[in-house]
Image (cartoon, rainbow, N blue to C red; front, side, top):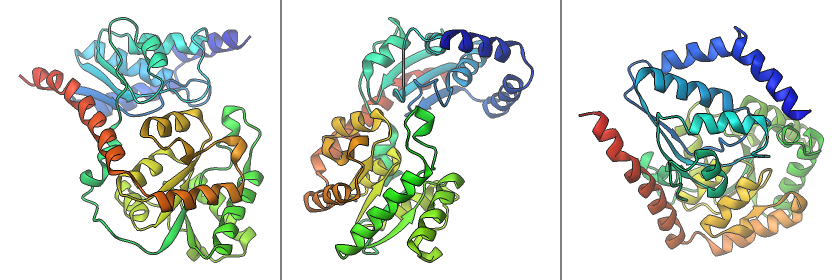
Length: 326
């Protein structure tokens, strides 16, 4: 039944004039004059919720039609993935396009290899976010003495079939805040910039009877977000790239895992215990693990290892870009 629904939706997508037409127009505008396409560091092997397969298919079609090369750099799996599902066939077609010249993985290389096919040897590398400190010229030893609590939208887990909604998130975030307060920590809430995350934050503040000063203004640019994270002594977050950003800035973090991509990433880094699994989502345990990460700090060796993986990923496809510029 699931495949039948997926095939029917794909037929409508292929022959309809709305979503596909708008996406085509978007890509034609963004890719006009582009010499090379690099798609970097995202959980793209996911079609049950975010439905990346259709946009990726269009990018490959555009590249083929316009003689462009595509690189999928340090991509991963997110959410449910079943090779038998019709959505995976579209993903495979996109990744196995003749326009695609290189594919690497940030997690689960076997799943990425299955999509990429035999044309590419998929290596486990790391995305460019591990060079965030250098890219944004972030200063060291900047602290406001607070713990940052990174929010996520109320329906984030429900989209992946987990019965954990707004009420549960509000209760959990309130519990984390109260636990930090009881242990003598100052804290504030922040978001990665999504309005839905801020909406949940206002519910949390209302429940805790706290003023708006406890919620950092929604960042309108990536530089604002990294500056916010850099000033904390540690963070509790739900967003993987917030955790990676903190890692690169020597800010210890724990991340609430709403998807096993988080657990795989933290395993690769070498901090598996800092990924709080769904069954461990309890305020006291989360703050216990945060305190452990604060005490243990960030290993320079582990950070350098991830930066080297990210550097290697770029060096692998850089010759392709240089060749196309000749």
